[in-house]
Amino acid sequence: MEYVYPAIFHKNVDESYTIVYPDLPGCTSEGKTLGNAMYMAQSALTQWIGYLTDKKQEIPKASSVQEVKTSAGEFVSLIRADVKDGRAVKRTVSIPKWMDEKAIQSGLSLSRVLQEALSERLV
Image 1 (spheres, one colour):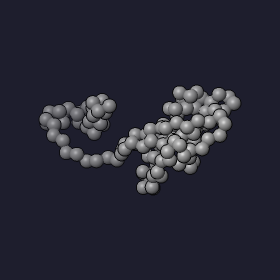
Image 2 (cartoon, one colour):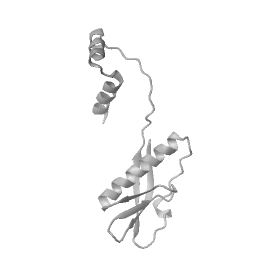
Image 3 (cartoon, rainbow, N blue to C red):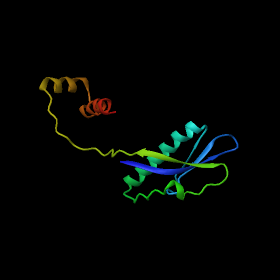
Image 4 (tube, rainbow, N blue to C red):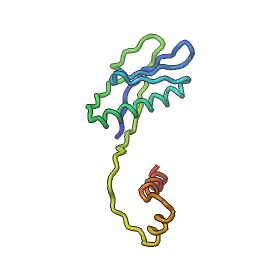
């Protein structure tokens, strides 16, 4: 699922950035450069939303950019997080008997092989 939240970026005296999400109390991060801060902001948001989802907690509504108040040296940017449901599901698949035997002999995990193959094709 896709989420977009406004983040406040505060430039520190050492040229690094501190990032806070006004709609997600406690969700903060830092970056050494602006590019790194943008990456860290997305990572923090993704992890925070993932945590709320895992704990079955309500995900707060995002404020509009215009509603967010900033102080001197701060700016607001919208940050996007694409949170995927990582829960395992059982699927029935069919493979030829010889492949199954070879996989067992090789010690391969069919689940892992399938996940890796799907990841390559879907990303």
